Image (cartoon, rainbow, N blue to C red; front, side, top):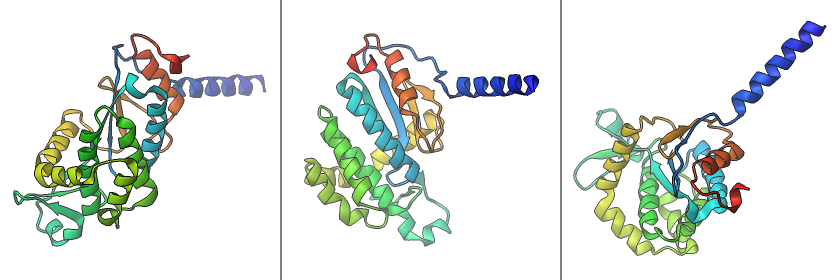
Amino acid sequence: MLLFATILLSILSFSHKVSSPTIIVKATATPEVKFFITSFESTSSQANSSLKSIYDMFQDSVTFSPHFFFEKVSSSEQLLHPKNYLKTSNGSSYGSPHGRQEANQNIREICALQQTTNHQEIWWKFVDNVNKNCTPNNADICWEDQAKSAGLNTVKIIDCFNTDAVAIIENEITAARIFSVSSSPTIFINDIIFSNDRLNLNIDNLKTIICDSMNQKIKACH
């Protein structure tokens, strides 16, 4: 009986150690949280909700850099299903895990981010609105009201989409390749990967590591 209790205690102790933050991140004046997501994957939506909570804690004390997943579509079989990919002005075709409308929405959210460099709370509101009210089946007709409600200029988003879509997609594909990312959500803090259960993002662990990555701790860290 004593041996069983000792073994059980060891197992519980080991489990506790595994769940605690283990990564070491170099401290900087303004830490960067870089995250790779898609617009409508359920785990990405959960991650967005968790990351928004982190944004609400830290706001301008942390730089939040979202990235989105795209892939180039070239096989004849894939091209038989136009609802699954976006055909761009240069003749190339690109997809996102949940189809063309998700690929479109990924681009729109990047375009929206360009409007909100100094007011990222507006971007988070837009993303939150879309997650709550739109789907990959109706995003193309749903997004505009969500953007207006968040305070965004929808004409600028449309212009950005029409002008910069190819460059945006290629930049995102390059970023995913550079950081060897293949699943959503994947989160980096100061370019060091934050490992966690993709279905249950631990906000406390993420908060702790962000605080550890700050040269000067802010109120949220205490």
